[in-house]
Amino acid sequence: MMAEYVAVAGVGELKPAQMKRVEVAGRKLLLCNSEGRYFCVDEMCSHEDYSLYLGCIKDGKIKCSLHGSYFDLASGKPTCEPAEEPIRTYAVKIEAGQVWVLAG
Ligand code: FES
Image (cartoon, rainbow, N blue to C red; front, side):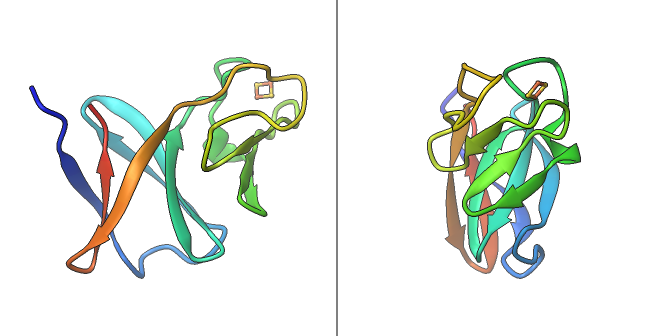
């Protein structure tokens, strides 16, 4: 099946630093608003099986509240230890007043 964009939120639904759990193509993802820009990443931290939804968004990064790693929301790469593996990121587009995520 070809990957398709799926509408997951209204454009104004999330305020800066807010996030929303969404499920696209069977994957549990987080839609994040960082300073007015939307990003979409895996919900689970790459360090241990812990939800990043319990963390917070700051300066284009999401923080895991269990051990404090930050991940860049654009690249998914950890910017500090203990996490070493990136989290997956997903393409986001804004169209027709909706935020769309591509997850194949
Ligand atoms: S579980 Fe996220 S940094 Fe350890």
